[in-house]
Length: 354
Image (cartoon, rainbow, N blue to C red; front, top):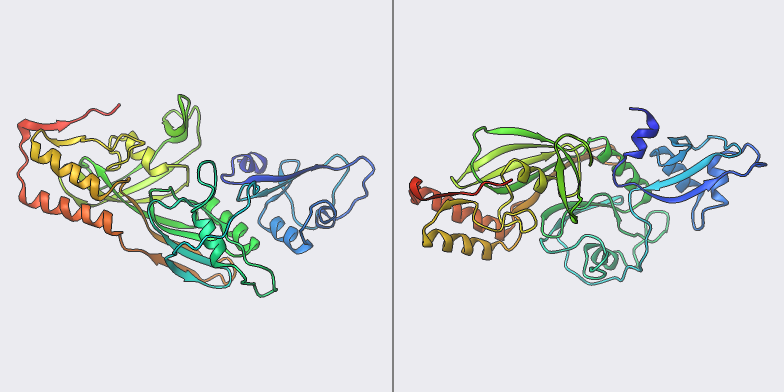
């Protein structure tokens, strides 16, 4: 793939600035040129962005010593959208797994939105981190702000990494893009698997009929390339606990991919997992499922582990988080059910998902 097309498809990078060099401009280093155009920045920040391949000239990334020429088109890309609203600090409890001068690892509770946006302007993880960093400064005496590197869904629990400096953020975002950050999720899904492990490869994009949900495009005619590897952890008959490893990081990737192979996440209302898809017609079974849904009022998905190279020290780091109480409780119920109940094959429910 050519560099310009690669950058056009680079996920989770947003254009913050765009400039066209005037006809009579002298040949000057791009870091010096941009310093005079971008407010509230420094030459060091511009150089860091260039090192992370986020300074683009005529569609291609350039180094900080590139000399601009008349009519060059310059874009500055960052791994977060331009801030459109003021972030209000809020004293929300945080489960901090790890923190140093450059990064912080959070074990996020289900139900917590990561970033303020439409319909969720307060009560988010970023609001909580903004409060946590109040009056704290970095080694250079600058205020510390939470800088997102990646996101997980509101109703997904588990590990999330946040940068404390722009360089760390850009470096980690680049690592995500090049698939050098390893993420594993645990998911409880409907149905049993014939095989112990497998891979789902299918483009993912927004559903043309409902822009709020994602869908697969098996022929690759739309959407973005996405790969999910899965492995069976424990079988319970009508549902299965699996481990998923992401090779790419598309919106709702695990949820959409598993639905596409007829294994929606247990109690995933958005993708059809909030009804009985496998099991029996018995009243006691229906009540058992309803009890499970009450215990776990969300999709059964947990970001369990995170492995990566530290953006500053180069040290290899790995973090693992236990399953949250709601998900563990439902898994325990299914384990008990599968061990003590006999499957009545003549009364089996098997919904054909299309």
